[in-house]
Length: 137
Image (cartoon, rainbow, N blue to C red):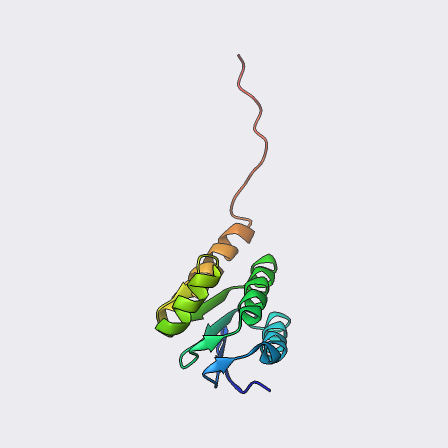
């Protein structure tokens, strides 16, 4: 079983795994925590990996899919405070280039808030995309 610290803020929830090694058999617990956040409010997630030095490839792959689920449902998924050894491992697995990563939790908060603003603007009725009659030739 994976022990995590969960901190819910107004716009997002922070999950911080309390282990140095996230093995494949812990993946289900971590993903269930992520799913619960996605299905509740606030549905934005910051995954704080401070202290995590190793992660099985299956966990990284599952988190990559989970990140996609968040963005498909108009929610943010940001990873922060990654240890250098874990960063190198994930880079070799090819997931770093697709993950939304920030060096600090504070920067992750900023990303979530910027993405929220973008979604609000895109969903806003302030923009009018009405058809305009074509000008005469």
